[in-house]
Amino acid sequence: MNPAQETAERLGTLFNEYFSTLDELRTHVEQGMAGGLDIDGVVLGFVQDLLMSEDATVVGAGYIGAPGPPPTPGASSAQAMHFAWWLGPLAENPLLGTTTEVTRLDLGAREYADYLRDFSSLEWYSVPESTGSRHITGPYVDHLCTCDYMLTLTTPVGTGGLGIVGLDILVRRIEPEVLRLLRTIPEPAALVTSTGRIVVSTADDWDLGARLKGFSGQSVPGTSFMVTIAERNHSI
Image (cartoon, rainbow, N blue to C red; front, side):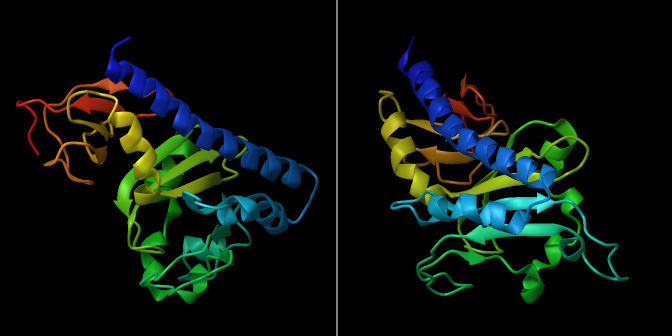
């Protein structure tokens, strides 16, 4: 096994740990639904320690789905669906200021949440709902909460449109561990999406969020990511 393959395997293990946590949250939600429990309490009870842990890379987590009563005319899907999502402490956030505790994301209080009017059109929700499989969205700039690059990991709840559970991972917080793994490859390398968007890179001229063209690489197990090595035929 060459260095790129070994790194891809280790990155697969890293992301699988996040998905294992997500599977636990899904189980809690599904059991809560079956038992008629308060889903908000179930979700908060699970995510609170996760979000408050020291050096947490997860900055948001929760459950979205299970539509409530029919919305009033003109109401958004955000108002019609159950949105049980919490945020961890944030330092000097441009939208929320500095927070030190877990806080619930209140979409109703945010005029700039209009882009969430139709959840079914958003990748982090629509892909796991339509495929029945786990999914990673990003890297993208999160304009709702952090104004920073984010990866959102989601997986469907139950079968038949019950919603999704998800984790928001701040790229700059996971970057040190990914860089450590990428640096075991002698050449400059990067973790990229299936469309070539750069997540983390050891190459000086490969920036986060830029898109590579004509690339190839080693698949990261359990994800749609790849590890690619800098070559002259790669362009941005």
